[in-house]
Amino acid sequence: MRLTKTYCITRVGEKCFVNNKAHCNRITILKRGYRWCGVGSVCLLFIYGLKWVEWFGRMPGVKVIAIANQKGGVGKTTTAVNLSAALAARGKRVLLIDMDSQANASTMLGVEVESDASLYPALIGEVLLEDLIRPTRRRNLSIIPAHVDLSGVEVELTQTDSHLTCMYDAMEGLRQRDYFDYVFLDTPPSLGVLMTSALCACDEVITPMQCEFLSLEGLSKILFVMDQIRENGVNSRLKHEGIIMTMYNNTKLANEVIRQVQQELPDKLYRNHIPRSVRVAEAPSFGRTIMEHDRFGTASMAYQAVAREFMARHR
Ligand SMILES: Nc1ncnc2c1ncn2[C@@H]1O[C@H](COP(=O)(O)OP(=O)(O)O)[C@@H](O)[C@H]1O
Ligand SMILES: [Mg+2]
Image 1: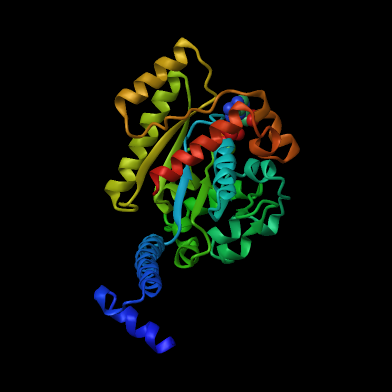
Image 2 (image 1 turned 180 degrees about the vertical axis):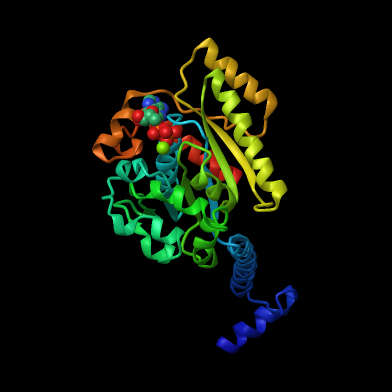
């Protein structure tokens, strides 16, 4: 019986070969079944093929992004923390390195600041940067906390030849391993040694910017410094990834500033702006991100939209 079936299937084209109608129907059903199996296999191969391409595309490893603007109080730390958390919630493996001696990013994530876990010893080559990584209580999100002793680095490093490359050198081990998808550097508010070493160590820069006229001046200054770093050859791959407008409120002034940025750097400006919200200012005192503190609030939605935009720009 089994032999007959096999025989008939191999001769499916020859309809008149079998005289039994029920048998013929069975063969037609089997024929269709095999055809659908074939189509299904091709689809699966295509889907898994795409996944492999995506995986191999990811092979170059971690992308290092500095959140930088030499002006203080423009929302750098708030953006670094909330963008990192929003990306981690979307399944990306993220490390946030707090490079500001004020340690605001560490506090915002509710991480205890210990002097033996600060970036300082890694920058002077005493310990490995990987040994300083601490978990946060969020999935996929880790941090290297800062400590007040980082302020001493500025003085100490300027006296060495490696003050521009110290951060790049410290990150060498991280770059070679596939631990993280993104490493964010929360930079201090000055164009000192720490900020320039961050710009020399990163692949991309995101500039958070307040919707004020003086911010335009600050923006041109940081773009100038980035040009210099590229031209000097210290970091020729440095890319200005984008500008995120922060503390936005719908005033004539804010809209005019946005219009000017849009006109000058149309492909750099993120479409989603972060609104000014008292909930953002409140969240750090609870050691929470804005998504944890006010999940459905406007600022939380805006940071999630920025994270989606970021992922679309990095596809
Ligand atoms: N969207 C916002 N709405 C209201 N307050 C904000 C917003 N973003 C940041 N802030 C507040 O502004 C202050 C400076 O922000 P911060 O992120 O520390 O700036 P920076 O790191 O550039 O110095 C903080 O008190 C922060 O809570
Ligand atoms: Mg800050």
